[in-house]
Structures are given as C-alpha cells and as structure tokens.
Length: 238
Image (cartoon, rainbow, N blue to C red; front, side, top):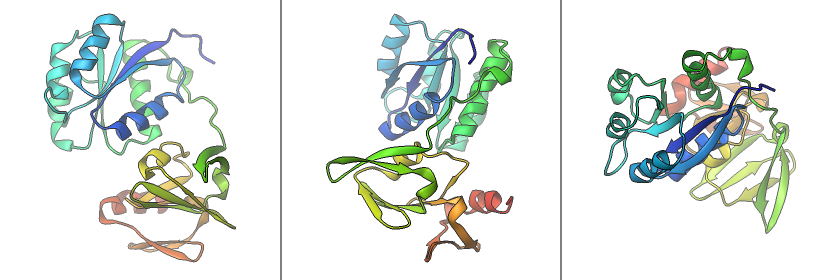
C-alpha cells in the first residue's frame, strides 16, 4: 500500500445516483479521502471554505450555478475533474485546465485513469503507487427484509424495473429495491457490461451476440442504440 499523503476530494453533482457512483469508484482507490459529497455549488463553496480540498469531481450542468462558473470562482490550486453527460462542454472544461473530462456513465477504469493523471501531473506520484484496493468478489443486497450475499460470478444478468431490479442467478432470481445505475457501481466493470438502460449482463455468461442482441442463458436481450457502439467494441475484443 502506498504511503503517500491522502488527497482530500469533493464530489459536486445535483444527481444523487451520480454522486453515489463516483463515491463508490473513489472509495476503491488508495490515497484519496472523500471530504464531502454535495448536491449544489453553494454547499460546495461552504466545504471549500472550511476544509483543505485538493481535488473536485464536478458536474457541469447544475441548477443555479453551473460547474463551469463554480470552477472559475475557486482557487486555482484546487484541481478539477469534470463529470458530465454532455460532450459539448469539453473545450471549455479543458480551457479551465481541468485534469480530465469524464463522460457519464463513468466506469471505474476511466475514473482511475483521471485520478492517476492528477497524481502524475500535480503530485509527482508514480502511477504504480495508485492502484485500486482489493475488491470483494460478492455484494449484499436487501431482499425480503434480509441482506443476501450474491457472488459476482453467479450473476447471469440484471434486469431493471423502474425502482427495483431482478438479479438472475442460475437457480433463482433475487428482487431488490435498487436502481440499476446504483447496482452497476458495485459490480466489477471488467466482468459486466451495460447493454441497455434496463440490462447489465455478465460477460462470462454470454453465449452469443449480434449487432442487436446478446444471448445469456436462454434469454436474448436487446442492445440499445445508445450502448451499441461501446458494447460491440468491447465484445469484439474477445
């Protein structure tokens, strides 16, 4: 484990799920401490005034004060990693000398790359010192008033129904009141693939695929248009 000083970071995003995903990713990385997670810029200003913040994960499209305006108004010694669903702001983001510009949905690997860039450029820390902590091979989900342990390698696919999901296992299906985006943040991204706003599949359980569908178990699941390019690029590497 690295002995380098912890970096204090702040997460600013008006969407609770986005904050949860980033927090989950950051918690897997050594040397970074999440000081606070804020839903709007004014709350973030108060944190910066009262804490020593080194790095901000900052959404751009927020009400009242945009991420761009917020970045322009804080001390330039505080570095920014922009997080947004929109490509349109990339040029303006980099003009503010942002460390990186991450497009949602943000994978753990992509966020780790941005953090490594920060350490290399601003903290002179070798990249090899920044590695993800050992992650679990399982997760717990609440179902029928119990916390149930689910091994990642047993998951065939995950299906979303509004505010709850079905986790399909070889011999049973677990139903839990959770969003698919929140559950996606808990999964090892090298083993699972989001193919649709309603489906995450285990890559190991894929029997076949076309440009339109992925077959897992006995189910042919649709690849949505918005995910198709990335899904096919990943699957064609195998």
